[in-house]
Image (cartoon, rainbow, N blue to C red; front, top):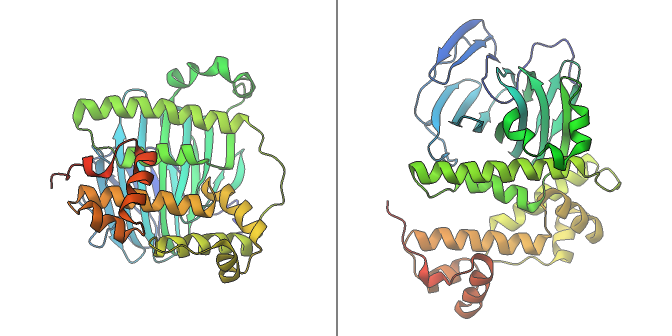
Length: 349
């Protein structure tokens, strides 16, 4: 996508100061964010979910949402002394441009969980993030422009204070050397591995309350920072850059797998359905999703199974719904979670 360097645009994580839609107006709301909208008039923020919202809730997060002819924007944020996390769900019906300005100095990160977002920042240039790619940048009060096309875009932002980051500097001297410049793009458009994706999702699926949740988040935020820095410092092996059609094929393959997890589509059949040769399919699928297609199917099955068990379904019912015989299901479930499915307690409504 071509982005004009002079276009009025959007921004990225933390402390959104300006949103550009289509008419001019300034707005402040409970998340300490000032927003300037263009052409659609001022955004009207509510502390409730959008009417058709189907996404996850960030446990303990502050909620703000706005709807209009552009679609809907839902932002959930959890703030602590040395970090903050934000879960963004943008259901966009018209091209949407936003500029985000951060007040804090530290490391700012974003990972795309669904969709694609193009970004631009003065002195750092342009970069795009696809599903399961992340960016880490270091700056004092960065202003980043983000460009959203018609689609559902889901992202997870994390801010790490310099105090938190400095604890890990001895382990990453190559990154520490870069910080003499400001701003610095530590990582642009890096593919997240399976462990990193699981860490991100652990925030969204946290079952703990209040103080337990805060301790859980503090532990996981350090793990997430460590994973980002490890992958940023590690030079990914050179391989053929995927073409746009190849990426479309990979996302189509994931959609086929996820749409019917009780079924198993063999690689040769999946390859024919998405019009991509088997070797390239397996190679790119692992790059994008951190694991092969079959491993991805098993992971999806077991995550869904755990959810169904927590909703009160029997082990036999769950096994049938996710494509297992009961005996095989118990074995696979124990290998994944470390306990048998019959020990899962129904979640209180």
